[in-house]
Length: 258
Image (cartoon, rainbow, N blue to C red):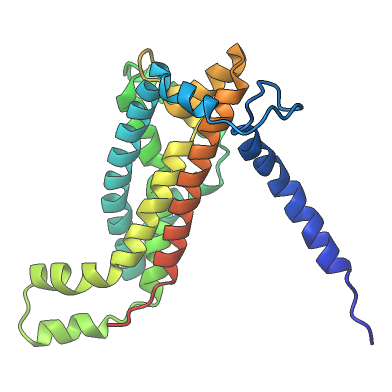
């Protein structure tokens, strides 16, 4: 019986639909012409203009500050949350799991509006700090889920063996538990970092004066008409994002070989 090629063709069409716009964007970032419909030759003109744009670098600095700080805090809190969810079973933990899982399924626009109303209600001025809190809110969930998946395959007999050999609680945590969980923690951290850099909707609601991030800056540039520079910036962001996702997948799939 001859195998049907319809699934193959369907897959190719779907991949083309998803990735063709990205390919066009990358190609146009090297297009000397200002208009994407006309190829004016290969040029790094738009990358040079991007490097001279101070607003972009200011937004990039804010984005880096928020992404790094939110990632570090999310890695700590997310790991603790995952460990608590894995080790303890109770109705309280069921409620805890719901709270951790909810940010993964709640629409970004709803979360952004909710956080904005919260900050206004408690009279917290919108700034980089409110963006940081908002990013930690959803990044914790991603880190917790990744680490929790790692804990499900974790062999706690090595912890018991370390205790039998006289290791203290601190030695067990720093010498056994954290090193074995490090790939999962780092994978969750990389995922949180990538999501924090790319986030626009939630950040748009909780950003204040002087706290423009890169996604908001890109939106502003689109409104004022700077497509070629945006193509160059988007290409760089795509490269960074793909590297982060690739590293996250490698760390998630990595098994203990030593």
